[in-house]
Length: 120
Image (cartoon, rainbow, N blue to C red):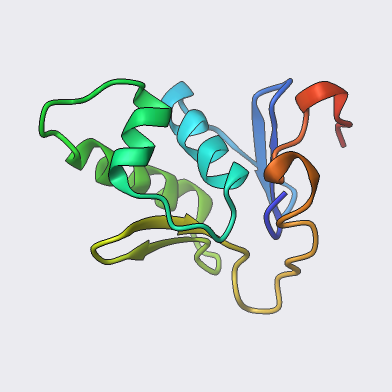
């Protein structure tokens, strides 16, 4: 969990503020990687390596494209959680507007369902 964003590995489901969010397999993988590293700036190269597992031969804009897809789904009408650090990369952190950040850096790196984690 990061703020009010919950990702369940077992069911491959995502919710924000209790509302379900439908993601493609690649969007899910990208969000999972971001959520496993809350508040840490991840470079495009790191993201390419961990989410796509190979070099796109200069097409690093694929990361930008998928980050934009996630923003449209995760941040739609809400306080932004996915942030860009110009020249460095991307990070996820709890939204502003009083959204509770508790648990954002807790066990399982912000992802539920690993090693028998609970669902809810």
